[in-house]
Length: 102
Image (cartoon, rainbow, N blue to C red; front, top):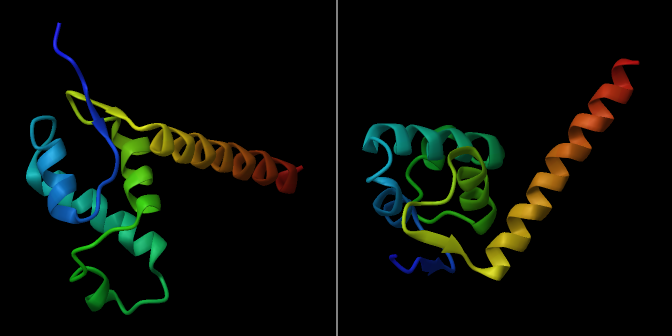
């Protein structure tokens, strides 16, 4: 049995791409992260958003939530906590959205 490596952080688009290339196409990874950047960096002009190389931990967490943990890796305690917090935020948004419709 192969030991999983611990993923402590993802600092930029290139690292993210390298982690997921065994699981999905490069173009898909690029499109996914750029979509996340469009959603998380709305205050930055569109042309500038896509030129950024670095990503935030929150943006990496969103990518992990949508696509799973990279092959051969397990998340560090810190990333697991951040992923759990993000999932709770999503659940709370869904609950408040349902309440607004009622």
